Length: 155
Ligand SMILES: [Zn+2]
Image (tube, rainbow, N blue to C red; front, side, top):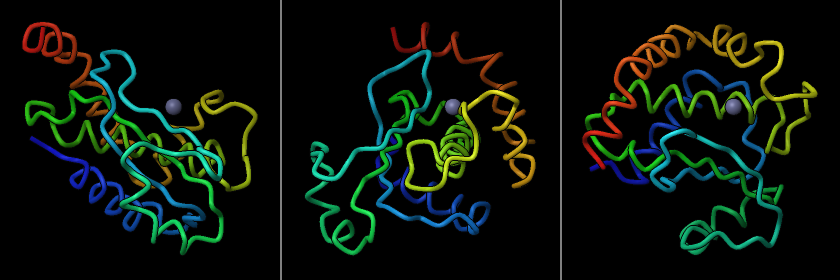
């Protein structure tokens, strides 16, 4: 079973290898959320002083070291804990959320667009970062297997 540490390592690996030009201006944390069938990932900006259950204690020193005291929280569906979901699907989901961060949505960075998805901005960003192929693979896998797995294996 994958844990939050697994997500964190994947996030930092993606950041180092594909988003290294994007400054990490605030604390960015990643965690498993609820068992969501429709929303695989989300990103939200918690303002200074917001308490994030269980997370902040562990991250307090890290937070203190940051200039910007807000926290960006990336959440992925709890189904991703299970090894039956391929790693590239988890990676593609995190990469998508990192594009939002890059574009200034739910992050302290300058907002680059009016809308987070319009104009195919995510796929353009992924292509620029050599991650589009993985996204296409993930979409293909999800189309073929996702509903079948979440309904038949887990319900
Ligand atoms: Zn999105």
